Image (tube, rainbow, N blue to C red):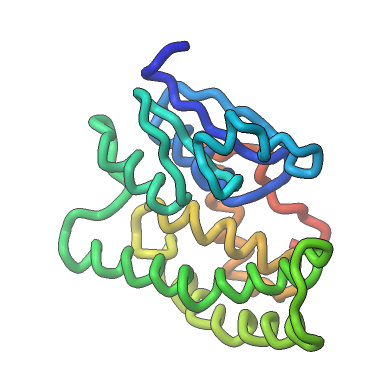
Length: 210
């Protein structure tokens, strides 16, 4: 196996691994995607658990290293890139980038994950009655600043495309799956991201009402 090639382990359906896939394409790295079905036990094998004992994706291997946690992987891909950077280096721009990413990570994604556990993943998780409704109500409230950021600039963290846009594309897609209304400016933002040459078609948001 070519040790310089990145190998991304992902599920057959959309997960956080798609963030990594998009970043690999943006940076132009050579990569291979290995799709494993957790419902067939393919993430419980001795080989897979030796990579990540939690049995979860994404996992990215490169030069003998095993990388986990999607946002940490995105930053790693940025750090090693010699051709382009997708995290700002100027202090104010870097702060805004970190602010929006940390906000999504603490105020939006956790509630989407709980809602997922109490809906499509209910066979695996048990939550008190009303959890789904409360989690989605929290998403509807907490996502409001995101719409303001999108109104204020072409991209989520300012005038330039960054890794934060990869992250928020997925958060918005995830919220849409739970019937969170997407304002018109956000719809245009999503189209702008989807028009990028390196956008992975397999993560395209379904467009029934977008």
